[in-house]
Image (tube, rainbow, N blue to C red):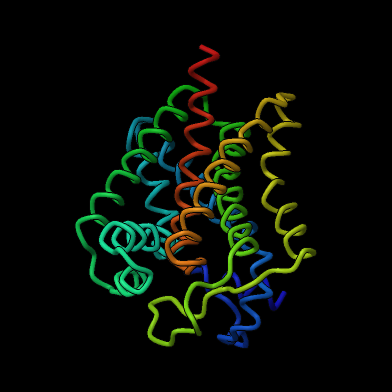
Length: 262
C-alpha cells in the first residue's frame, strides 16, 4: 500500500496519506503500479464522459470533459513531458543540448505545435470512437485500456534503457524519476497493464483486440531506438512522451478497427 500511494502521489493529483514521503527508492519500487494508476485515471475519464452525456448532448462536450478530467488528475504530467521532448529533440543536436532544452520550463515552438496536434488527434480519435458505439462496458474498457497499456509501454522503456542524465538532477521539474525495474516488477506491471484489454477480449469475445499490442510494440521499439541514439537513455520527459504517444496509438487502433468493420 505504501508503494501504491507513492505512485498515486507522484503520478496524480489525488490525495495520499500524509505518511507517504518523497523517497526516490520508494518511487523506483512503485513503478510497478504505474499501469494501475492508468486504470484509475482512465476510470475517472470514463466517469466524467458518462456524466457529460447525462448533462449535455452526446456530442463534443462529453469527450472534451473526459480529456480535461484526465489532464487535471495527472496535472498534465505526461503532456508536459511530450511537449518537452518535442522541444528538446526538435531544437537540440547533441545530447547536452537536448537534455538542457528538455529541462527548460519554457514551452517552445516544437512543443507548442506537437502538443496541440497530439491533443487534436486524441480528441478526434475519441470522438470517432465514442460517436459510433453506445456508452457501455465495451467503451469503458477501451478507454481504460488505452491508459493502462500506454503506461505499461513507458515502464518497458525504463527496463530497456538506462537513465540518460549522468546523475540525479535536483533542478529537474519532476523529481525524482523512476530508474530501473526488476523482472518480477515488470511482470506484475504487465499483468496490471494488460488487465483492461484482457477484460475487453473476454467481455466481447473478440480476440482481434490483442493485435493492438503489435502497433504498441512497434512504437515502443522505435522510441527506444530513438532515445538511445540521441541521448543514450531516457528521462522523465521521454517516459511522458511515450505514454502519450502509446495512448493515442491505442485510440487510433480502436477507431481503425471500427472503420474496417463498417
